[in-house]
Image 1 (spheres, rainbow, N blue to C red):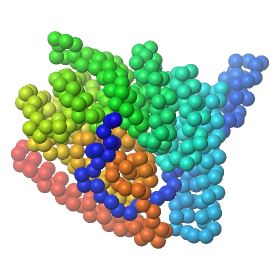
Image 2: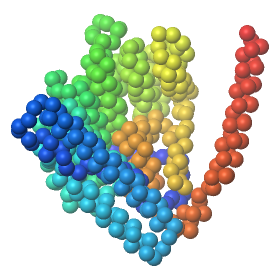
Image 3: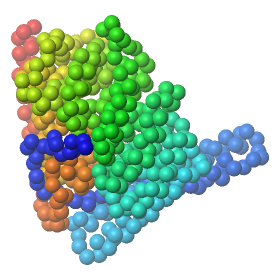
Image 4: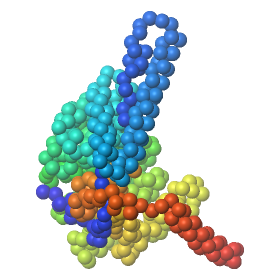
Length: 468
């Protein structure tokens, strides 16, 4: 069995109180309307057909706007309901029923004949699943939705396949690591691997499948065989960026393929966090020599992911053996220093800034064994990200959930178990209201912070002027 997903739980997990059930605005699906009517007419001139198609597109966009407006107002009314009692609870229940009706319509539209309608439905489901916890609603519909996603992955193209893989990832995250999540993963794992390894498939579809395979395996893999097969598949993808035997220069690929290799390496490194120790030893022997070569890649994201993965491997190695020693540490540190102080003008300024920040942290860890600590606040709680294992886990969920990650940290039992936050906490309306900061207090705090930052920067600028 793979190591528990709580094996690397927080070393200093903060617990507080957090409001639960807070509605987050999300976009619903576009209702089917003029789109199909405008495309079914046979007669007419080419100009009439173009006009019908334009009207169809406009009707889809208008419907989507109406749905988005509906959910925005639903979110606002739910926030107000948190502060009220009595009849407000009835209104909130009515809003919830309306939300579920829209979700049912989205699930039905995933099998629609129109490609446009299917994509709108998938995007709406993606936004809904990432911003709300819907275990009870999805429990009895997971098989229907899984079958629909399988059809989209098999018969769809490019963007549709990418959206379907993203929704599949979120469905697995909603179902959790129990039998339900395992069932979803097992049913679509072969198809994800098939698309991922198909060089003729759309690159954006392969990118999403790489992320989906890693995350779904992390959540729902039931045995080591599933874990090892996913590791090998992902390694086969990003391994093509490694230099060929006898060469020290990474193989050059198109930007889309480099993004695919980044996603595969990220998913691969996520799975390392649940690997048994015997598997980790094999990986250390094989990859601590290969990964440093990716630091010379011409893609900034691939360089950064490679650096973070090297730090992760060093951390896992020290957990297995406190006196772990890497023979080429000096050469590795030289490369990391060069990247941490890179000022080459042919690189974009934002790329240089991002690269220097990450590689300073990597270098500091390799030399001193200390990981930069980050505090994540959500509601009234916070948690500490103080290791590379924990950093990879949090970043993976943040990439999948986007802005909804804080909502899921508050309410999703799977994430709270993974990060050792305990069961979701429930507060009454009075406690929620007492915890809120007034707009005036926020303004005072921001003004003070701005003034302090300006003074600090002014002192630094003065020192630079003296040097010049």
